[in-house]
Image 1 (spheres, rainbow, N blue to C red):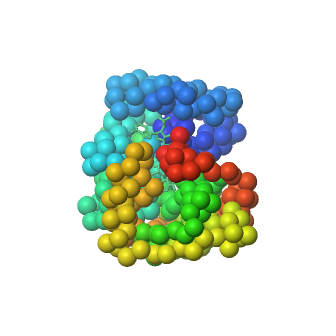
Image 2 (cartoon, rainbow, N blue to C red):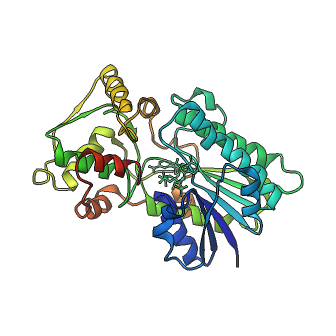
Image 3 (tube, helix red, strand yellow):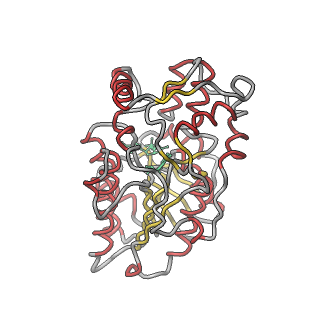
Length: 334
Ligand SMILES: NC(=O)c1ccc[n+]([C@@H]2O[C@H](COP(=O)([O-])OP(=O)(O)OC[C@H]3O[C@@H](n4cnc5c(N)ncnc54)[C@H](OP(=O)(O)O)[C@@H]3O)[C@@H](O)[C@H]2O)c1
């Protein structure tokens, strides 16, 4: 039976990926900083939770021994330059070396639409630049393998929606308590993709790659849904689909750039993760839509789900946390 490690397996995408892997008959190992973060995975058979510091390269290599493949889903959305470098660049570098040391033959890495391994420094935000540098590090390691190279697949999703998402749920919850929404980055473009389609893509890449030679890698795919929305449209939809004001949602006002940045700077002063950081706003300067130059879900035989019917089903059911504290907790996924 094939064995796989899922870094970041406790997260939003990770839970869906782990469930699919178990269904496909993989033995799954999920390293986590805190065992309690993996509570929701413990019911899955053939899944082992391992409390482990994945940033400790020796510990990572030891934990990886005996695994055939790795999926890397570890990422952060907010933080300092040092934090982005640690999680999005240094960790992939350590992972590449640990995979070689442990003889792991296949790596699937979740990056983000807008990241570019060829020109990472040109991206508009710390998040996207670090994602690009992380991609480049893995590509270099996969290409320069002499003794034990691994096959590499990089997946770049647009914003991901699903019952536990941090975007639509957040803005639906906000509209339950606020009379209107002052929105920074209102015109930013997104092509939201369903978390189930992302998980299917991950598992499908594994099935296709296993047995293929490392020379055929890396493969880079863009994971997008069928429709493009502005952020303002997404926020309006969140209010409407969750039934706020009998399905009309709250009025949404786009903020000019300078005011959006001021709002983000003020949010950064509050405790907990900001709802929207200045770096998030910088990311939005690059349209989060498919370039059309790279293969997508269709190349894996997956027809992406439309947002409205899926989001309506969970937004009408979900009861977001009470008040801003609850919103912050939801935003940080805790
Ligand atoms: N969600 C989206 O809309 C979206 C859009 C584009 C790309 N992506 C990419 O898709 C991947 C999965 O995203 P997601 O939404 O599932 O993320 P998530 O819910 O935030 O989960 C990420 C996981 O990474 C681990 N982690 C977080 N910070 C860490 C740190 N400093 N050190 C070690 N581990 C850490 C956590 O595991 P433990 O707490 O168990 O340690 C967490 O469960 C990421 O690469 C993300 O960039 C997501």
